[in-house]
Amino acid sequence: MDDNTDITGVFADIFELTGNKVVGIGHNGEDAVELFLKHKPDFIFIDVMMPVMNGIDALKAIKENDPNAKVIMVTADNSTNTIMELEKLNATSIIFKPFKIEDIIMVIEKFED
Image (cartoon, rainbow, N blue to C red; front, top):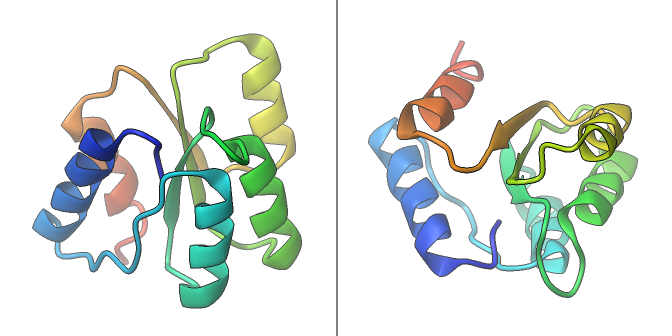
């Protein structure tokens, strides 16, 4: 989930190239929660800064519903406060912007067992 449609397109392309199925694309935190609850995907990528509901609030809502959900957070904010908040909320992984395609592939491969 990202409010930037170019970024969501890149993520979708990478998922499909790595043999994963994209079950939904959203552009705000509410979309992220709604799509997660509807599809229960193996993993979800969420940007921290989004309109309507930010990614941190979306992460909280998803983890309240499914504490074992694999939620990968994407952010340009590498401040200690943001990192500590994401870790406290049990984000599965954090990818920092600007990212490399290899960073995304590496995280996806962690879920392929």
